[in-house]
Amino acid sequence: MTFFSNVQSLIFGELPSNWGFERKAKSAAVILGVIERHVGEMTEEANELDQEIDRLSAKVKLAQETILIFGGFEGNHHRAWVLDQALRALAGDSYDALIAQRRKDGYDWDEGIAP
Image 1 (cartoon, one colour):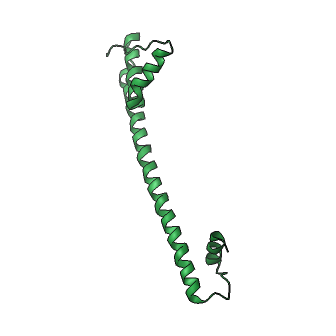
Image 2 (cartoon, helix red, strand yellow):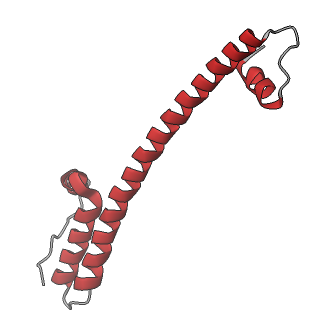
Image 3 (cartoon, rainbow, N blue to C red):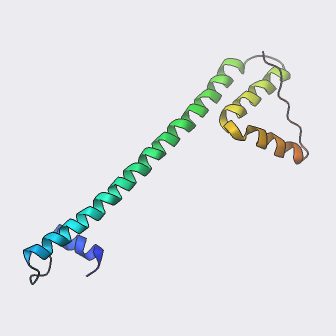
């Protein structure tokens, strides 16, 4: 009997009739232990994903606020600054590498002038 068929049997109460109570109890304990371990791992992964979502949401919110607060100033030099600040908020630590790669590819990046 495989692990999953044992789980199914436990759930539906179909363990072999020739198994004694002790064997059924041990099997149930092992299966429940495995299930608890997997649930614990999934809970830990879910918590890590929640933290990542919160971190990314904060970056997006900062970029949005930058655009909404400063995006209305006239002048390309000010709008370039807004785009640069929004990119910094979204890129975080990878900002310098992104700009370096852009320049390496032959493009310019204007950091603009703060309004």
